[in-house]
Image (cartoon, rainbow, N blue to C red; front, side):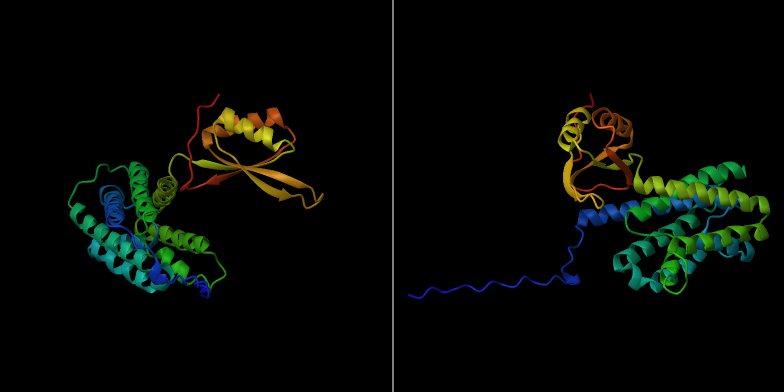
Length: 302
């Protein structure tokens, strides 16, 4: 009997349709947190910033000024001005991002309408800029962290990025400085300065919300005693290490590169370990904004 040889089956080509969809629980979690972020945005606007004539950057800032000049409803302006940008950048940002963003903008618009009759918590523009900026920043950060956006300015910057000699970040900064400066003509110059303060406070709050408080560090060490140093980090700091193979470009010598991830509070202890074992070691430290997977656990430091 002749043996039948099985032909190797070709590996199926992965297409965009094969992308795994989010589970119902993940979608629910995303929706709730985007909803919460949009509500916080509305609170920051209607309870702090808008009553004190302090604005935010981007489309939100334009909507606040147009509402003040025309008397039109702020919530309606937020929706009308934002949504076209998301449709404009649909190809660049994707379907899920677009739907999440439109959902967030709808919640924000409705929230500002519902909160408009509520009395502001303070009439001090400094307090309004500080606390309004923080609350607004946390809200925007939550929406961004879970896959959406509440302002179409960045979408516009992405769309025109290939046509102008500026990065997306530079374009957004230029647009926002122009919008915040315009507050001086619409309201007053002191309100423009308060608006600039609120914008930078919100900017930092967005960073903290997206990245979290527990900032982690990536560590790269090139040493002549890699095993001894790696064992010390493992036993004394309680962090796992990975050995990578490297080669010196100048000497051509093979080197072992030690890689590990630590928290910000462990950085000083790690540097002390390296200094104690190999003072001549090359040490590089970088910031990490997010960690996923692996086993990021440790034993006690000693």
